[in-house]
Length: 315
Ligand code: UDP
Ligand code: MG
Image (cartoon, rainbow, N blue to C red; front, side, top):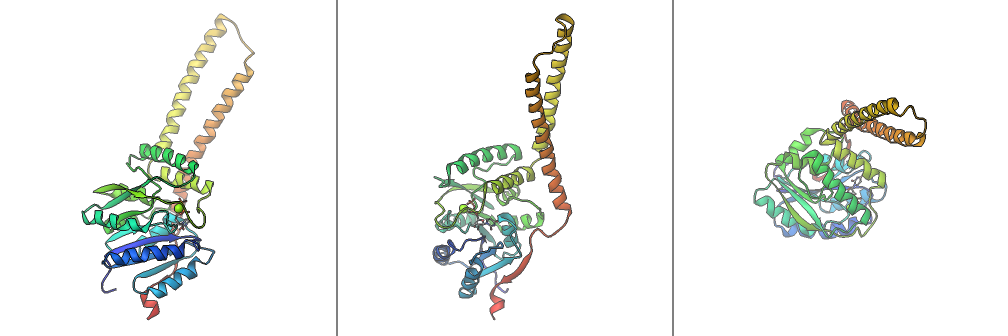
């Protein structure tokens, strides 16, 4: 490509046939009104509905500005974004969800901040419109993750974010098997800033994250950025050993003074169940990390691109 655009918009798409028409309608005018060169990269993350053919048609229509990366299956939102990052041409890179929960009208504000020289523009959803359960869970996750990872992000889940090309290239180079883009971006940022953005309810279709997918995503987030959970397991083991030792001493002294005892069986069982629980959880935490090492050493590609639809195809 002779001249690369200034701005790249990266949008992962997974079964979003209901949202796409509205997205096309809202996003394109916003980009054109900027009066700057841009490209919009859609990543089709193995959609099983009509999303791909809609993207294909849209690309045909806006041949110069729209590119579609068709992945070879469903690799998840963050891998889809990574595949987009690996192919961007712009210097300013902005990620956006396809479901319009973050209105495209916020894009110019992010670009304004990038013009000021910030390299990562984080965002924080104002008046978030999501189910209560998700909001409460998010608040806990945001707090815990900041604690564990040492990062400072007020809203991990908000994907409408801006990254300078330098940061995007570092993210691509990281080649992580499980990742969480906003956290990775923040980690490499030299000059980050956070701005509030508005948030809407998902109007069309439904969230692509089931409860368990959400849980797994959060395990990825926690374990990719810190080994603190492993250290917490070790520390709780130490505390429990210490308490058991004190308990043992007490029982010995009691045996000498009062004599042996046989009652309290259920207390013992309760105590045992509690300790079993902790042991199994500890194995799980270790397993999470082992699983990630396993995935990383397999060296399989983290995403596979079937084809990129862009200008040259239509010549
Ligand atoms: N997405 C994706 N692959 C997936 C799941 C989601 O590309 O496996 C996309 C989805 O199409 C949307 C964005 O990631 O553009 C965010 O998904 P969603 O709105 O379902 O997440 P939520 O807003 O509920 O966190
Ligand atoms: Mg959403």
